[in-house]
Length: 113
Length: 110
Image (tube, rainbow over all chains, first blue to last red; front, side, top):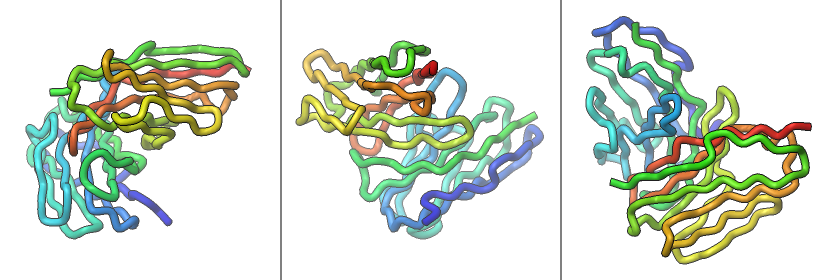
C-alpha cells in the first residue's frame, strides 16, 4: 500500500521553464491537495480538489495550475518557473472534503535557478 | 484568513521528560485541529487530531488540549524518547482551508 506517491522527488529548472509535478493516491480518497513548504513558514495550501472534477484556489495559487485527472491523480503545473517558486512541494489526500486527516506524500524538492 | 502561531520554534528536552508545544489560531470558525510529525526528508504524518466539540484527547504518550474560548491548543508528549525527535506542526482548518503553524523542532537528548 503506497499511500500518496509524488514524482519526481527532485528537480532543477531554469527560470522560465515549465514543469508538471505528479501525484497519485491509492486510498480511494475523494479530496486532494497541493502544498508548498518553505523554511520557517510551515505548509501553505496552493490548490485543492474537493472531489473528482472540481478544483479551487488555496492560500498561494499565483503562478500555478492544477488538473484533477481522475480520482487517483492530481497534478500541479508551473507554466513559467520563477526563483520564488523554489520550495518543497507536498501532495496530500483525505477521505472526504474538509475537517479530515490528510495523508501526505514525501514531497518534490524543486530548485529554480 | 486564518492565522496560526506556534511556539516554541525549537525545544530540547532530556529523554523521559515531557514536551509541550502551543498554538493559537485567529478564526473562531476553525473546527478541526490536527498535529503532524515530520521527519527529515519525509512528508508530515498525522499523530493526533481534535475537533472543536472536544476539549482533550489522548493516545498513549500523546495528548492534545483545546481551549476554544482562548483560541489555543497544545500538544503534550510524555516520557519522551529519542525517536520523538522531529519537527511538529499544528494546524487549524475551516472546511478545505487548512493553515499550518511554522513548526517546532523537538530534540530529545538521550
